Length: 253
Image (cartoon, rainbow, N blue to C red):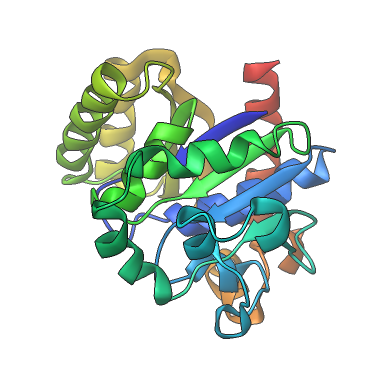
């Protein structure tokens, strides 16, 4: 079982879009996938077609060890993968976790129990570096970083790289950057081309070959409660994510 955080400390870079579409793409190429929504906004939950307002058990219960993953998981009706949902309740978990033992290792311990059920676990992290994100980073083998190729993107990236180094040194020696995914890419914009080249020059083969184009259908899909990959399988964005899923499997094969 490979556990990956989809993380970037900059907001609005397409973390949730990446998480649900990579999950659906991996499911399409025959992988067993679990999505863990660690963001109190619950966007990955809703984007997977699970109503966050109707959750009887959520990732909140898993972190507080009042429910197991097997009890809390649901299936994404269209996505073909399983989901541990999140809602506003999760915002309170931060405060409650502070006084508990092993507070940053709770998710890791919960995932141990379903080790043989999944090939991939994708964790959608909130943009801030919080105890929730820390739980994700402590549980993961690696981080997938979705990035827009724009001027400030590189600044946010150095913060994230430092965070990953600290977690690697102190809490989780398995943790590494698996790769950078260029998202919302528009090849007509010269600056995006330049930033893309800079990324490749600086990070080499850590930059995934697949590029996710700016695509309206991917943006529309969450309001229909499903990943873009299943919402409009022929769209450029959907095809790119299936391509990305194949690249992930190949890279780790």
